[in-house]
Length: 313
Image (cartoon, rainbow, N blue to C red; front, side, top):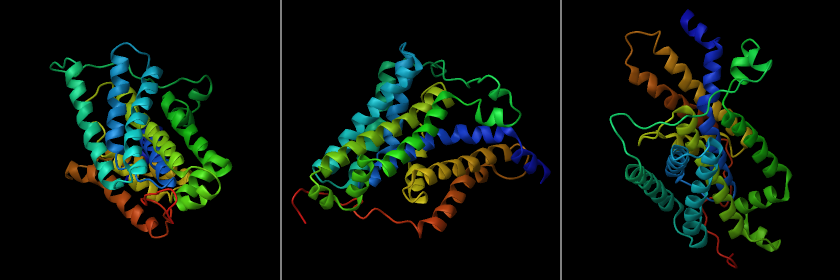
């Protein structure tokens, strides 16, 4: 018990929570944008994998880290455009298209990696993002290590939460996106194009998802390998429901899952006689419990997963 309390009061735990939450924040924001416009994007796992590979490969070939992030976003947006064309323009099943995108993007990423990168006994690596040192602030006890010694993409993720929340709640574009997810015919009656809004939301959301994947290869790790994403995309889909499609609650959900994950990793070192698989399973079980408790009160966008065809009622 004393060891658990010691872990909970350590700054390293809470610093790890922010670090682990970063790819989830990007992913859940991207999924939230898609779904607020009425499109379910189950391609998130593949999009994150594509972003991870493209960003890492760009840096491996000599680009700087920020250029790698930008190229990862572009790869995610291109993959998202394919999903949008299939589901929005052609009106195909969002479930089938999303799963197809996941399989296609993941397999293509692995194939191109093996085609273009010579892999020896150890996977090749890059020089990844390192924690920033902010004068004075980083030297503060506890708070400095938790909040002011993170990597730059983590701060970008936190800023993205505020930007997405502001766009959705305070701008005409956000209102149009939200209405597209509720009643696209009302949006059309206002002279706007629901199809273009949905495509734009999916493309932008997929770019954010790819950022989450790129963080894994360019900050958390410094190499690319097939099992890199490890189901984080599916967790993001669940977190959108947990968040009731609100950016602020999405941040809370990402931090909650990251806390469970960071805590179980540290518990493994102080608790003996318990199979490590139980610790690995704990974050997912606790997240499912939290999702069940919250999901019953969640209000789903009315037009989510409903194909829109101009002129139909």
